[in-house]
Amino acid sequence: MQIKRYLDLNSILMKKSCFLWGPRQTGKSWLIAHQIKADRVYDLLDGETFLQFTRNPSRLEAELRPSDRVVVIDEIQKVPGVLDQVHRLIEKRSVRFLLTGSSARKLRRGGVNLLGGRARARILHPFSQVELGKHFHLDRALAYGLLPAVFFSDSPREDLKAYAGDYLAQEIAAEGLVRNIPAFSRFLEVAALCNSQMANYSKIASDAQVPRRTVQEYFQILKDTLLAFEISGWGASVKRKPIRAPKYYFFDVGLANYFQHRQMVSPGSPEYGAAFETYLAHELKTYCDYLQIDSLHYWRSQSGFEVDFVLGDEVAIEVKAKKHVSERDLKGLQALKEEKRLKKYLLVCMEARAWKHGNISVVPWREFLSDLWEGKVIDWGRSEG
Image (spheres, rainbow, N blue to C red):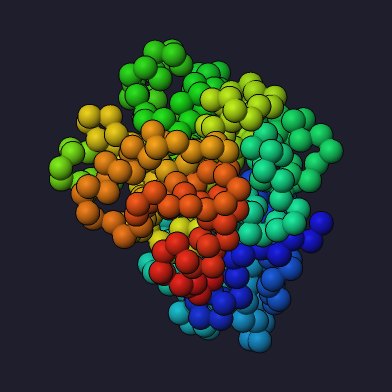
């Protein structure tokens, strides 16, 4: 099915080269095929291409014609040495490159030339509700996630299982990121059960049967391979001392469910509420990355008040998977509002119509997402790309 993606690569490549990162199966190849009119495309997963550039990275310059202006190199982390040639061609011939991969970890750890600001970086996420439009179904998204191949699959659970296996085989084992694959597999299950919660490294280490330091290294691998993202505590409150410990969210709620061994999530259950929060975290993270907004946090005071998200140091957002919100559900927002540091206070829920409690707006989730992507929640506008 042809779903138009929000990320616009052409607007970036008109001005500058670009690294396009993204977890496996988020649609990088589809996006390139449907958005970019490239003069040359190199796939480093192709055995012959891989061998040619491994033996002789300078072959890239030898193959390019004087008229070539846009070149795609897929899975660039497979042959890091090619980046020196890319650097030269950007400077010498003004070629614009789209360089894709599922992780920049191997490049960064190897001290590889990342083009010194000559290329922008974008992350492609799974589908968002604004992209799917009429095809979006909340309960399906909360159960199976929003990876393109999984969302439209007739056997999503089987495809999630295959995805998890491919991640361990291709991203972790093949790249040599960890030595003990069984230990990392145990960690994945424990980390999934802690999804959306403040990270307690000592407890996770005990449950996963690995040292605490190893747990921290494993979380870094999840971040580097884009399987999870971190949200830190918002620390600008004064009246109530904040907690800064990080929270981790899996990039896709369906994959989190798979590692948690959950087939479905039933409305009204705690699991449904956690899945709903993870889905909204995905929407907010996707929005921030696509519009280059580097400010998404949560807030929790040492006395126990909490708000799920603080967006752009302007908007507090609490998430409740409820059709009927009570005043008790507003306590975190009310406590944060006493700080007088933010512009808006929103509770996103499943009620049918929006209403207000003082300066706190209770907003149906569909209305919130529509306002978010239209630039009505936070006044940042849409940036290029």
